[in-house]
Length: 166
Image (cartoon, one colour):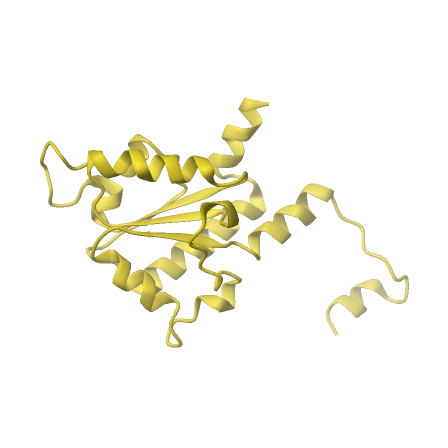
C-alpha cells in the first residue's frame, strides 16, 4: 500500500541517519509530569480515554527523571521549588525537552509576587509554551504535536545546547 509501492520490489529504503533517529525520537517521547498546581489536573485528563495521548507515542508517564525525556511543567513555580525542578531536569538523559503548561509556568500568571518565578524559561530551556489558565487537554496535545514537529526538524533548544556543549 504505502511503503511497498515506494519500494517497488527493491527491498530497501535510503535515508539520512539523522532523519531516521529524529523520527524515532519524535514517536517515543516519554513525559515526566511536574504537576505543581491546578494545571496538573488538565495534564492528567490528557492521558484519559477522551483525549488519549497514547495516539502520539507519549502514553508512558514516567515519574523517574532517568526514564523520561520530556518534562511537562504544569503550574505555578516558586523560587524554592525552582531549585528542585532544575535538579530533576538535570537528572534527565539527553536529549530532553520541556513544555511549560499554563500561564503560571509560562509567565508567572496572575502571581506578580516576589516568591513566584515569572516563567520557567528563566532556569529551563523551554521548547513549547501552552497558553491558558488552566489550559485544556487538547492544548497540551497540540503542544506535543508541535514538539514532535520540532524534534523531526531538529529545532529544539535542548538539541542546540547539546551541540554547543560538545
